[in-house]
Length: 369
Ligand code: IPM
Ligand code: MG
Image (spheres, rainbow, N blue to C red):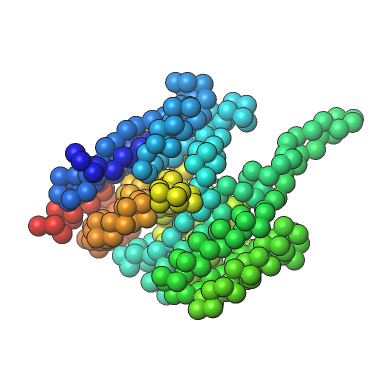
């Protein structure tokens, strides 16, 4: 079809293919029922790629990703590949595609659906209505800093080392993403660092303050990461946009995910810088991993994957109505009591992965009727 969007789909490992199967049904629904249309290509990443090609990120996959309009990924990793040398483990594939596409801005919204407020391990009034956006720097920091490695010293002693580096442009570009997004929300940014210990984050705080100065209508605050972890479970609603380094963002976003009831609910968008034609590399994936303990059982929650697709519509194609339609369908399915095992409770209707897919498609049908 003319004007179709080119989507690269990377199912990956564990529950990845199972939840991708459900989002493909939603994409197919969009194709049939809305004005938007997609050309879908699938490629290998992670353990699935290792099994077929010997490497976690085959050249063809990166090339296909660079050519696509957006990438939709499941998850990578699993015990089967943990015995492999570090350099060829599935996670290298994920980090490789993030770096290869220049996806420096990782958006992880933690939104509590009313129907799930009681599924959170925190008290209802602490999480009800929660809507925060964690912005994690994704292509720098200790994840990529050099030097890194494990060295043999004398007498059988070994030394492991990684390096936390940021340059000012890396801080500025992620800071701007945070400020711009806050401008469309509650106009508050909290930058998280460890400026009482780490020089790199002393500079992070100084540079964030400079960025903040050119956004006078945004209220910028700073917090140490240990305090932030505590505040996230004490009073998460104090936050609007949170911006932080790669590793702090990794940790804090898992914590924020649990506020929403389940790690199975959190989508994410990873965005690059727009080029001169306005084309912006983007990859969308659930925050949760491959959940090896439940993979193959058909019980995984596909909602984070489906919500990742709604983020794709919103951030890559400005298709706000279509994105909202999906979010509304998810909300309605939850309101009617449909629950996968990770979020179920008394009086709820326990459904399988495809059962939740059915529920969302049903709601889409009703919304579009
Ligand atoms: C995430 C994951 C990844 C990360 C792993 C799988 C490499 O935990 O996306 O949060 O640490 O970035
Ligand atoms: Mg993580």
